[in-house]
Length: 173
Image (cartoon, rainbow, N blue to C red):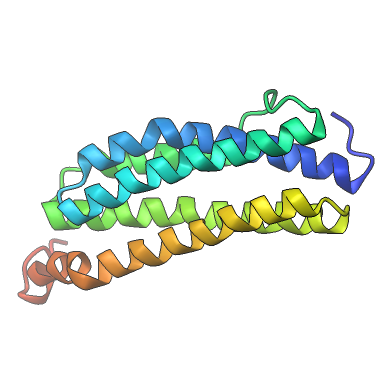
């Protein structure tokens, strides 16, 4: 696809997001299953439902644009999910594993925040206020998810993961 206008770039970005969200729909149940913390597991399950709504919003935008959402693979999300998979496969203590999964999930959220922010700005600049509003709604949910992940990590997981190191354990060289 040749990008001639900002609207072309918007469509390209939306296709990338559509691919990213669909990849995430497949990955989130695995992250929930790997989580040791019930709070973290529930957070991933809730975000899965949100992510399905994100896809629906994107489909609404594509319908209004009369463009197919297919045709692009988000390589960034593919890589982020692969890193998350590596984290889930680590031989780690439960709290350390949860801390690693949260770190991987936050990388995903930060990618989505950046992507939705750019797409929303492009939609605003090309005068597509309806798309901009839908993208803004998703952007705010992504920010909320990132904040919730930070809250879960800081409330107990990171502290408990740090305890062996604070007691002098796990400092193998």
